Length: 309
Image 1 (cartoon, helix red, strand yellow):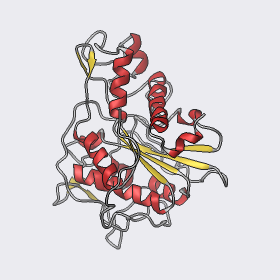
Image 2: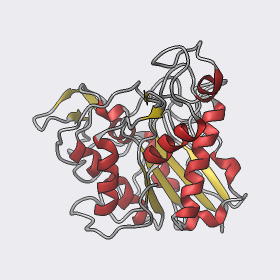
Image 3: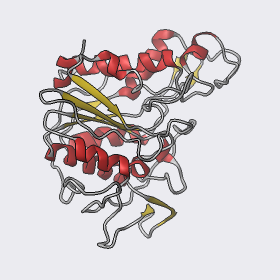
């Protein structure tokens, strides 16, 4: 299973960017969002679809005094999703915790870490990264969802960060190179730490990719990049990619019935777990993936485990 606990490492210079509470819905990030990196494209459907919330819907109010808030940042595999599906693992996460812990799910379908975090253009800059919108001071403009989380985050809270699916796109606005990916995780982690909150990195959940009767890895270099970022920024990492593959094999989801891919007509255990493709979950699958995250909290002795039911 995934690596446990926090790893010591240098936080890097300039990555406490976006740690100051900004005023307004779309604030600016006072610092570099990161350098270019050569991201390896991975197979699989984009973690997009209809999980996006509308602007202005971002919950920012923290829990009552003495309670904690669990903030979720991610793509459609984490998002609340739609009825009946797709549904992300964050949709049912609240049910796993005691009332003292409030889950605020601001994951959005179709986002890379940078389109979730910043206003991103559809053209690349000279570094090979997608250009960012800048404010009058030349700083990247933050998305409303991140500004709302910054405004509501407090000491004792937790921040889960899971991207690495849409980031593999070769084109803007979703393309993110590996170094920029890690730097963006660092920006978010340092902002959380500045507020006394604990960030937790999560490797991208695997799609169902079969070789015979065995589920295979599917998220490539972004899994490694997430682990490397956890080492650099001294943040616990949950290897959900590895855990999800192990679950698919335990459930016997391979081979996929009726063909090599999942569709709306796929039946059996695979059809009950996934929603019309090999990436997005039905409620049954989403709840089992959420259970993997909860199990990792306990197994890795992460403090949030004390709030689990």
